[in-house]
Image (cartoon, rainbow, N blue to C red; front, side, top):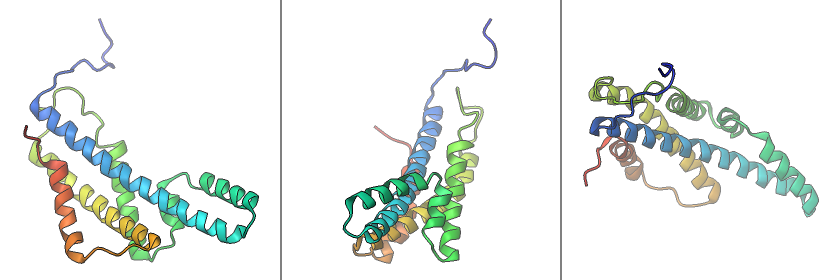
Length: 175
């Protein structure tokens, strides 16, 4: 007899595939947000290292190495950006949503989910997480756009973006 600690239910149904797909897309959005925060924090430090190092490649390389090792968490990366409080708060809400998606949301969601989850309740509970992540994604995307000197997209694109992400996450695939 197998101990009860192992996964025993490997049934995959249409409903289960939907839930797993939603969680997977939420993880993609979460990883994107985290990666972009890390990239911008590192880029800012590298630019600062170039300015501090002047013309010495050895000094520059040492400063870049220090910058790469400096940031280990999304929290540190967000704090290093030096944003106004309201913007930083939105970024931290996105970070908390990312942590919820990565560490709590998928817990216990193994096996056949047809009887374990209610689709409407599940998606209702996801809505605030998606809203926070999308706002964080917009903020970090705009910050990177400004950092790169690229033109900022118009407000109509940003207004539609949230609904496009929501649809991507929650709409079932039809072949």
